[in-house]
Structures are given as structure tokens and as C-alpha cells.
Length: 199
Image (tube, helix red, strand yellow):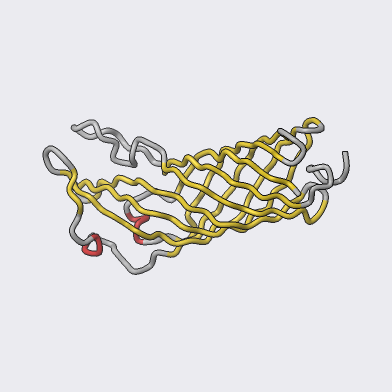
């Protein structure tokens, strides 16, 4: 095995599919709804580029898009929010050899982004109604920029000469919050499924 985990391929272009859940599930209310978050995961995509800077250690960046679903129960009033997150990561990855074509890896870094296209709803019988102006919701501000600390631990395997499949459970913590964090948890966890082209 050469010094590069990709057999002298020093660069990697990766597309990732994301399934994430905002942590902090609360008890169900009388209607059977979870008050902490939606029951289904928030999907997303990420395109990233990594470059090896020394033996098995890579630095990477890219662009990340995620759709968010969050429920809130504050002051005895239930709301739910949908929104889009667009962010740019700065990530550091270390690979650990298992076999010639298989590695474990550990990634950590920072995501810098902003929340856009926010929609709020409130419940009526028998359906949810869109809030006419979410800017009137308590704790609203114009601050939509955030930063997240990110860490994952994953596994990858070489499929063909230049193609790699990997997956990684991850954890995020919101360092710099937005007004929406008044209604959602700072913790997020999920899994990335990745396909990489190495060159």
C-alpha cells in the first residue's frame, strides 16, 4: 500500500446523500404528535472536494443543502417549521486502513451556513394552516446565519479503480444559533451515504 489511502489518488470528489434528525424528542401530546421534531428525517445533499495533505489525512470543502422539519411546543402553543439550510463545510478527514481496499475514517470540522425559505404552520382541526407572517413569531430576528461543529466516523470500500462507496453516522452541534433555534434543538444526528470519484 502506498502512502495514499487511494493508491496514489490524492484528490476525491464526493456526492453525499443525507438523512438527518434534530435531536430532542419529547413526549407525545394528546393528539399523538411528537413535540420535539417531525417523525421523519430531513433529507439533504452535499458535494465536496478533498485533497490529501499528508499520509491518509485530507482537507475538504464543498456545498451542502438540507431540507429541515422541526416541531415546536412553546408557551402551550404548537407550531411546526420547514426550512432550507445552505452551508459550506471545512472538514478534516483521517483514514485508517482495514484491508487494501477498505478503510475506516474519522472526520471533524465546521459548517458555516444560513437558513432560508422558512415556513411556519399552526394546527387547526382537521389540518395545519400556514402562519401568515412568521416574522411575528416570538424570538424572531433577522439573523439567519449559523455555524455547526461536525464529527463523523465511517467506513469506505473501493468499488472499482476510481470509485469508492462509504457511509458515516454523524453528529452536529449548533455553535452560533439563529432565531429558529428557539424552536429547535442545537443537536442533530444522522447518516451520510457517499459515492466518491478519486483522481
